[in-house]
Image (tube, rainbow, N blue to C red; front, side, top):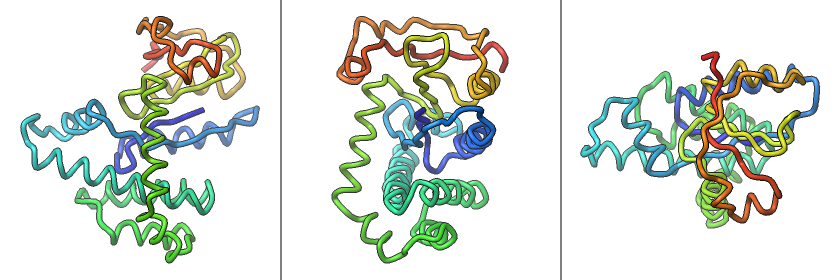
Length: 219
């Protein structure tokens, strides 16, 4: 399972907490990754959510900068272990929700300390070329999966489906409950996105088409 998120977004923060709870209660082992996402559509979504005008370049540039630096910091934290990385992610999102301000070094270092990170290693990794390249690879993964918005969850090996399924992580909570409980989801609404005519390298490597934009009726 992949969850594509805004590393400083409150909506993603609550979606992540819900999904972690579901995973902990799941009957089967669930392998998952949280992946920071930043593209034109995801940035515009956040602008709209914050009621910022599309032509507000200062607000857009600030948002892009904050998401980018928070993404690199999250990647750097993950290098010290998945659990610590996820704890770091939730920490910075919680701080951003409380402060409603700009993402800062102080927020990052506070999260690093509370997540039990080696701070010297974290500082080196957050500024490394390898971390930046890792973030770029995440964006390529999102593009290959046709993911343009966050929070989006992509699941594979779902019972009853011979392909991957992508869903809005907030709107599809009921469906995720069914899937993680080992039940076959019955109330999915599929929207054709033409993925089968756009088989990219990721889909070919998995040998199955990816269904995009599948939401639950039970919002």
